[in-house]
Length: 219
Image 1 (cartoon, rainbow, N blue to C red):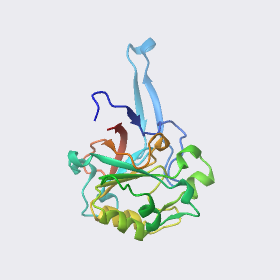
Image 2: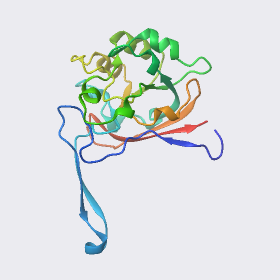
Image 3: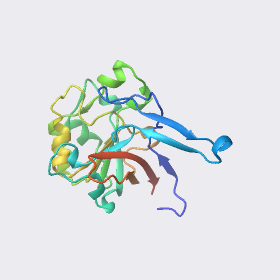
Image 4: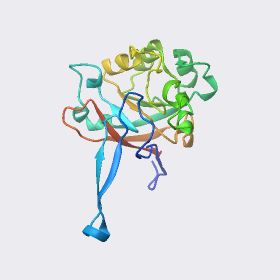
């Protein structure tokens, strides 16, 4: 890594009325302290822990799974690769064959990020909320077999919305692999090039997940 690496912010902006999981309440970010009136600025936040760019910990779907505060910090940083699957999308499912075709040949990633292009359509529309693609259970198993400890996507979920059993979630989380969802700006990364990914979820005691600031550093 260079002395002053370029840093890519892969985090979606948190705003009131931003698109969230269809059954989730809208977040609110309310200013309650104003410098002109109070001498300081401060805000009140009211939202679910899985709002915006966030991390799913194994406890999200597994009763005995690791909670977000117990994920070892060394697993939150690692060599990452982006898999640009935009041209391969022909429906809601991303299969194992697609992952194999885009998996980096020149290095072994510890974290992979799925670029579907969905973040460009971020809006409270039926298309964005309900039609996003995700991994098949077979693809999730294949990815887990590659020895990764984290995976991310620029959609609202690692499963397609149509998979009501959340099978990819359960496969990955069951193998101790954390999941990042609702990433942004993945098109700034280049396929088959290694990055150092830093994922910083809020350290919520007993949390099933948490909002996260996610950064990719050029190596």
